[in-house]
Amino acid sequence: MLNYFQGDTIEQEFKLWENRKLNLPLNLTGYEIRFQLQGKDTRNRNIKLKKATANVVGGSNNQILLTNAQSGTFVVTISKEESQQLLIGKYLYEIELTKGDYRKTFVQNEIIIESTLINWISK
Figure 1 (tube, rainbow, N blue to C red):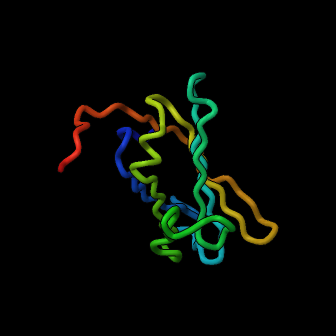
Figure 2: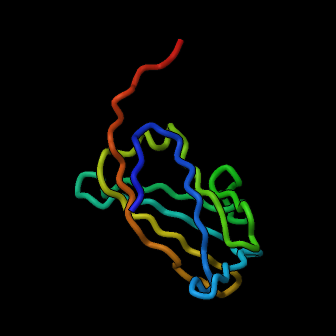
């Protein structure tokens, strides 16, 4: 489970494994990576946020940046404007990889968005 604050820029790094026990990362070269965040609670269930790598139509390096394909690492970025629109509560996220006819969901987990105490803007 990941915790973040509403209105913050969120930059979350992920690492995917071919075999974690053998310390063998998944080589992400040529894969399309998709990330989706969706509200889990009744009041935020209709909130969805989708991100993708640059090789997916509508995706970009500003959404999912492949930081090291060979070591299986990438960063998903949610802007402060996007996180401000998220209601306080629980969300599910999912990461899916595709390459040709291959498609696999690698991660499904929970994110909690909390309220922040500091909310003033500098002049």
